Length: 98
Image (cartoon, rainbow, N blue to C red):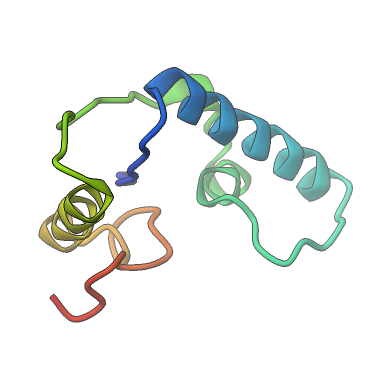
């Protein structure tokens, strides 16, 4: 199962943000508290029992020209790997109809 994401922050900071959201959502899911939007990895955990430690993380590219270049590359990869249908992405990024 794949998830494509982008950040202008360091990987460490972005991963920490994902971890915090994941942990908060797991607590809500276990207590059956409704949330407007759950983190896709937390939903995957609920459906499969996979923990965050079961996932692998890779940096595919860095040093983009600007924010737009980074967001375009993210959208390209989401479409290339079809991670909205076959993965954990909730949207296609900046190019909904690539």
